[in-house]
Length: 436
Image (cartoon, rainbow, N blue to C red):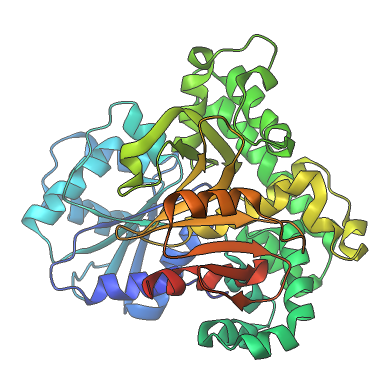
C-alpha cells in the first residue's frame, strides 16, 4: 500500500542536519507500518522497539539519560548492533515511556548521527499530562487515514490519480463515472489502512464494516484505559454526539446536543482529550477572512469532525445499499458525509490551515476557509450538482478574494473568480492555490 508520507521520510533521511522525527496520528492510521516500510526500503537494518507495556524500556530510561548507555541497552534488548549510519531506530508508542521522549533531546545534541523515527498515538495526551518535551530538538510528521487519491491507488486506479495530477480535466470528465464510483466506496469505507487493505483484497463490504467496528471499539477501550476516570463518560457522550452534530443544517457544535443543559466548561477536558488523540478535528470559526486567519478566530464557535469518513458512516450505520442509489449517498444526512470527506482531504495538505466563516447574523456561511500563509481561499461544499451558492456570492462581493472554490458533483469549470471543482478532484486545491 502506497502512502505519500513515505516521500516525506525520504526527504528527512536526505537532510544533513536532521533531528529525531516524531510521527503523530490517531491509533490505527498506519504509523507503525509506515515506519517499518521506510526502514525496509531505505536502511540496511531496522531496530524496532515498542514501548507499550515494556518494562525493560521503562527501566532503561528511568535512570540517567546518557545516550551511549541507552544505545548499549537497546543493542542488548534487540540483539542487534546499532550502526548510526545504516540503522533506523524505531521507537513506537513512545508516549508510554515519557523519559524516552525527553531522551530525544540528548540524542539530538550529543549523538545526532543516530537516525530515529518515533510514533505515538496518544502523544498529545501525554504532553498535556506534563511530560517533559524536547522542544526544538525533534521534527514532526502528521499522518492521517488514506486520502482519496491514496485510496484510488490502493484500489488499482493509480492512472486516475495521474490524470488529476496532470490537470487533464477533459480526460477526467470523460472518465468521471469511475471517480464517482470510487468516491462512493471511499465514503463508505474511508481511509483506515486495515479497512482499505481488506477491501482491496476481498471486495467484501461486510468484512470492511466489521473491521471499522473493531476500530471504533478499540477507541472506546482507549477512553477507559487512558483517560481520567471522571472524564471517560463525558468523552463517550461527546464522541457519540458528533454524527448528530454533523447532521444539523448548521454544523456548529452545540453542547446541548450532548445532553440537555450541557455547558462548555463541563466538556472542555473531554474535547481536548479527543483532539489530542487525533480522533476529532476541531475547525474554528473566523470573524474576518484576513491573514493570518488564526488572529481572527472566534474561540466560542467551531465544528467537530471525525478522523475518518468511513468510521462516521459506520457510526451512523449507513447501509451499503445506498451505494446503488445514484448520487444520493453524497446528500445523506444533509451532506454530513460530504463535508466530513472534504475536511479530511484538507487536513492532509501541508502548510494549510482550515477554518470556516459566517457573517455576524449567521445568514451566510462558507463551509471552509483555507490559509496557506499568503492567500485566503473560501471553499463552499455542495453535496450534489445544485450550484446555487448565495453565501459564496455574498462572501465574494464583500471580500473580493482572488479565487473562490465551489466543490460539488458538477464537472470541472474555471470562471473568472470561481472554480467549480468536482468532489473527487479536491487534491488539486493545493496546486490551484499555489498558482495565485
